Image (cartoon, rainbow, N blue to C red; front, top):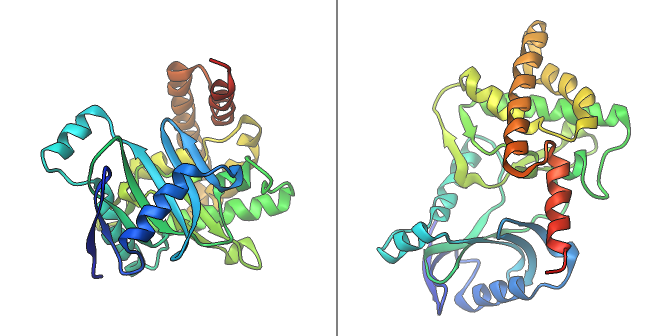
Length: 283
């Protein structure tokens, strides 16, 4: 893939494909910053902002991440953004038959307070989080929910058997493009900077870590989600279901203990609504 370097005043240098030029990049970031449409804001958390913008290159997803102090010093000394790895990561995923949104531009040597990643926006994609518990897309039917979870389990087993490790495999980083059924849905990974290609099937510790991240859900889903997902994950090894339920359950509770110590909320939905409420409180 041929990449070019672009420079934006005050924002530093970028790597970009032929799909985007300097003017389009500048306009995309400006539209991202000026966004006033809540439905076009995909994420706002701990300073990270993700929005969908319209541009001459089509609809794009702009991810803006604040640069912390130590990182800013690293960039001043000539370091490059970890986002630059995404071009190669997406290509390697494609070679394994796995999907991720195509990157069109990213910060190379950022200047200012933020760095950026810009990807293509694919309509029809919805996060696993939004299918399981957040928003208007939540799957309410019990049988359909079990089919969704089974599809996730089978997909994740395939990912692990390929030796792919995503250290932040949470429901908001897994997207689905729904087919006629959940069994025919296409799965996409985001935040692929965090992906590592281990070269061989993952060990049990990493498998349990990813499974507990995916299954760290609101409390009312605990009894619904674990069995169908883990049954599909184990496949022909489903006779080992009970030990896996115990291992993953213990890992989930440890994760929740850590969350409670960190922010006072035990479950992921409590943390989400707590953070939302804190942003809306008058100063």
